[in-house]
Image 1 (cartoon, each protein chain N blue to C red):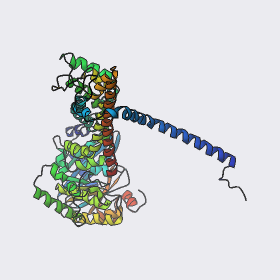
Image 2 (image 1 turned 60 degrees about the vertical axis):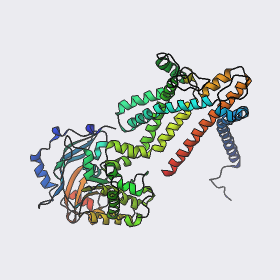
Image 3 (image 1 turned 90 degrees about the vertical axis):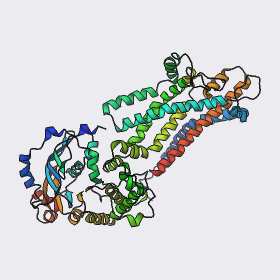
Image 4 (image 1 turned 90 degrees about the horizontal axis):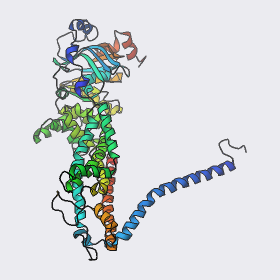
Length: 289
Length: 287
């Protein structure tokens, strides 16, 4: 029987198989190396933090070291307040800025806006903290929730702006044209047709940005400062989970260390929840398209 | 995206030279000899995309309440031409135009003309059906009315049925009005888009190859629809399909390389065209 010209020699076939297997193995190892740290993080947070997680943790103020119980209720509420304030700044400026970039503006001008947004995305968070300290803390002579919210909100703006622009650009031009051809004014075409079509993508961008800033500590050190008590006034220092974790983690007390782990677990759960929301939103988007 | 004011040439500088326009109208756009109402009076119309000239000195008078077909090979400017009839080019950066287009006597490119108002009277159906994906069938039909301020539910309800009936879609979707517009088949989606265009009560409908993505049965339905619309509407249809032009239009214009080559009764264009290029095209020797 004549050898088929399409079959490799047995020796070459063996070598090729071995090479293919080796490279696949390397690739799998790299992929696993990416997700391994996530399990490491979750393992330590649960192992160290879950023992201190109880009802009190979510309802009580921190107690002095040595006293049993106590929680981070003020820090949890503080984080939620700071995130709300950040969203109040980041969402309108980011979304409207993104609409401008996608629908208006000249190429040249937009090029520089995009460039500036990308640079802002790369500004280290501690730098944000220092700048807001100079602008909002020093003149008013007090650390405040306002300053913390502004620092986080400004960090959100470029993130939300770029993702909003990206999803708006993805809306097919044919929808804009169809709406224009109905004699609909430009602003309504943008809001009712284009933004509505991209709404899930915009919401996804907002939540991703919130998840990004929820764990930020550095910009809050110089602005919100932290607080061991309930803060009833946004003009006063306010606590936040990352700040409380930072303070407790640096302390010399074991019971505070345990509380810091529990705080980290709660913060991680919050961010995980935000990310899962994003997953659900973007899955719907794909199935609709 | 450039603002409309940048894309539209200031008309003061480009006032058409009407003396020289008259003979051109007699040569190329000279069909309407008897007294009939003119929907579009296009004179010495030139258009550029950046440096490239897409339309060259087009002069053409399109009759009201007739179906006018525009044929020609790809890239001949036929789509560019009908998109100029409701100012769709305003959205495209880098376009420039000269000459004048009048719609029932009113200048479409005058200095203070509101392009939105133009498009309310001159609707458009596109090559690819494009119902809004976030909206139900009913909302798709009514969106134009709603966004133009119509709130009365009974008016909207009546319009919904009327337009879907006109688009010959009512019987197929009357029980599915709240399903997404994108759940329909391709041909149904295109008829939905036609219903959507009719809802804002235009007097003119531009159709840019409305059947090119449809199968023969869906195409027949759209063509029947065009026949029904000619009673009340001026229809201008761009088509690649010469049989379609022959079947459903009263007049046919042949465009080639940005110029209007010949414009006459459809029967004449397809049986005894004057221009040899038209003859070559309609007999299938090129394009």
